[in-house]
Length: 210
Image 1 (cartoon, rainbow, N blue to C red):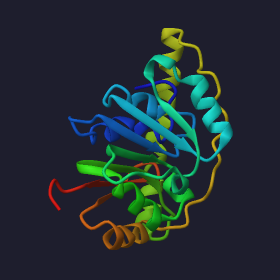
Image 2: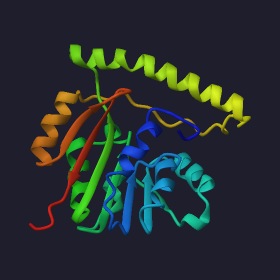
Image 3: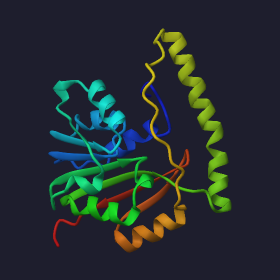
Image 4: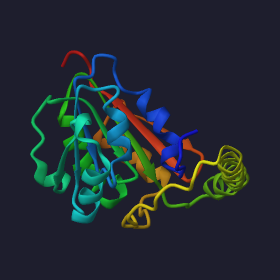
């Protein structure tokens, strides 16, 4: 398990498994301090990362070795000008709830090449009994993972990671039901799954034809 850990990092491997084998060019939307974009460089020849917060982009650039070749841009998705069919993989890790859902998923899907994949790790507003039950069920694993990482650091002598700049936070406005309905309307064929740790995934693969 990678150091440092958080609810989003927990799903990085899951997101990386969605990257198509032929990936040449990828875009990470709302990249924050650039953790996932850095990992994408192992799967895609060219990685671009965008974020509207200048502090986040500054830290992402500082933390990303030049040899990885990530292109960081301080801009919002709406202003980036995604060309049709330009990307084999597009990701949004805990950033979609900061944007307009419909406009953003349409723009990201528009940028996919045939066979390309859009992978979203999103946050949702707890609304139903099932939502609250899922949140309660996440507490014990969260504690266990935290305790395990602390023990591992203690046994191996690995120091605590340097603190990163605080990521701007916003409470999600859409419920999981709302996400599913919106995905059905604006991104037919997308698969939405409830995940642990107050997250969901949305995965869409652009058809090879049409």
